[in-house]
Length: 113
Image (cartoon, rainbow, N blue to C red; front, side):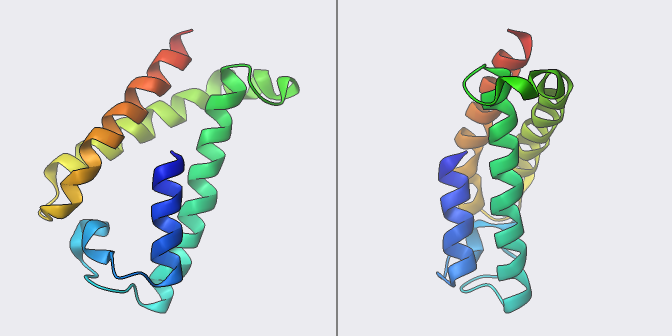
């Protein structure tokens, strides 16, 4: 997840990697509105990572009851991400398939533990 958060941060800062995101709709630098979306994505993805770390009992033990059901949101997100990265028309965006597969697999392992 850290890799994806860093990538979103790079998009938010204006690096010209837009072709590898959002189906390649914004090749080059993201426009200002999409840079804000990338920033929001960073926070959302960090929140999902936190849920996994809580469920794995590595952070904030007081949030374990919340993570017991929230982990399934992470699993669904991982599955959706994997599917969308597989069917994208952007060839370069398919580089995210292995990352999405690892995220999905790891989240399901933690969910079932």
